[in-house]
Image: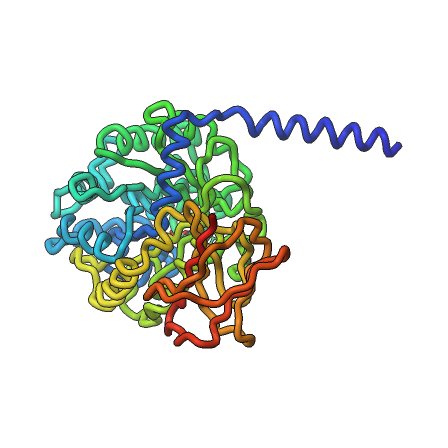
Length: 431
Ligand code: JFZ
């Protein structure tokens, strides 16, 4: 009996393992993944016609606005103050290496010039310009990567069939094949028309787990058009075949404070976690729960220490400007990155597990211990350091620190140093 069960388990395992090995990333794709991990810090942007209402990107749903009424927002969307050059410069100034922007959110409005639907910024608004094209060109010019967020879920298209109606007037009978084709056509536009797009960030899968999303075809198409594009999906589940990175939402990998990261077992792919600068993704005029520079830096350092990128979100205003609370905070984060970026960019983490006092990143032969919380003891302990440590110094000024290496790990004595208010970085050199 047990033997039989073992055999069945083994066969199931083989089936599963087989399913997971259909996609073989190209060398370019593997290089793109490495590069992605080196970048560490990105800017997430939620911007759409919902921004006008200043109540987040879910406003159509939360305020139960019928689709046909919601669509009128397009008539007033005219972001005259939008300047792609400013946005890209702002991200760079903050120390960010890539931008991930909503090309189409759940409301179904395309923020780019698409031939596949008239419900897009070029054809349906008085603005008549394509901000994503301007952004793509500017990113290329200023040397920063661009990724597109793309919603699988659509709150208005008649061919998208909902499991249960959420928004008034939303169709429940759809034409699934037509909808899948529509998405493929739009993704083809996004990948072939916009210069230097390096990633696609899917969302909305969780709205219908009972349908066939044809992810194999969608991912296959993306990789056929450009094998180096990295694909991720915010499905809150274990990574699926054809994906190139794994994402976490509002949680550091391994944590589950949100309740929806339970099924996100950490896999072997590059990791990314996203979080909001206040409490909202899309512009929210009444949200003043701004995170401090210290909170943001800690999030970034904690992510890096867990081998993950940090994608920090802002919701620009409907006029195209970024509110000063965000630019002020991120300028300070940028100053910190200018000084300390060496201990973040290009590093890897999780070589030493997160400790009560903080985390460790490493690059080449150097370990960077980030002391985020003052330890009770006069020392910090780094377990499992097998390489011989030849020197330990304070990263800020290079002054040497006393240390003791044992088979179990390294003790670094920090009782004589003035701790940094944000992050005391200690550099350990190995031979
Ligand atoms: C999703 C979007 O719905 C949201 O608007 C934003 O774009 C964010 C980055 O991603 O957020 C979700 C998605 C699913 C759940 C929670 C938040 N969920 O299933 O609990």
